[in-house]
Length: 274
View 1 (cartoon, rainbow, N blue to C red):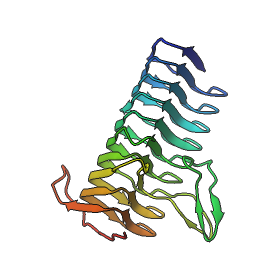
View 2: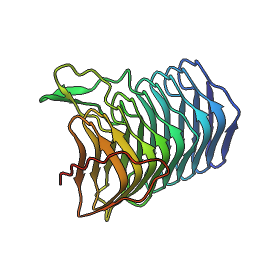
View 3: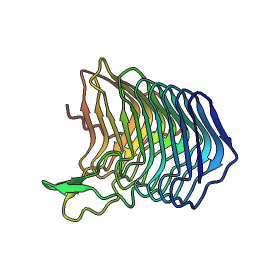
View 4: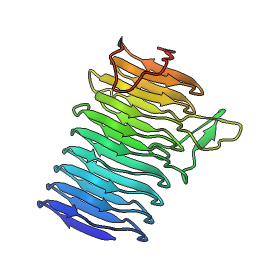
């Protein structure tokens, strides 16, 4: 694979293929610099496709494929910087699709796919249901931990994963024109499987908001959409045929809107528990 590290400098990788390595496909680390990955493939590796980390720098990913890796497609961490993904695929990876983590930065994901991940993850079963250890089994896990940053998903698909479609942690979350269908593919036998289409929780660090527009979450093993946020807005959000229930929401303020999406609307099924 490819390994590179620097303390203060930036790292830029473009038009690289790092497939079928025994460990990570691409491992990059920087103390204060930015990491940029563009037009690159890191598939079918023994560990993660890409493992990138920086302390104060930003991570920028564009047109990158990390598929069929034995562990995760990509694992990205920036303590104080922002993480941005565009036109990126992390599909059919063994333990999970993509893990994005920052303490105080923003996370933005657009035009990307995280499907069919978690086939080698094993959930913990007991008390009548099974659940995966986060972030295993999930298509996408994105967390801004300290309640300062914003997490944005636009035109994202996270479907057919063995665990959750997407797990989002942050105090300012915006999801639009995205689908989270058919998650929870693990065969848990006689136990129920706790795997949602979309799961959003705040960080208990202050006022929190979740805004969803033109989102679908159908045929998931637990809830279609589960949200813990003080101020929640659902704008043309559709969920149906989820095993436990279509919605589970805990909130102080809830707004439901019906603005048009670009495609025709499906019949809504609102089942709100608070």
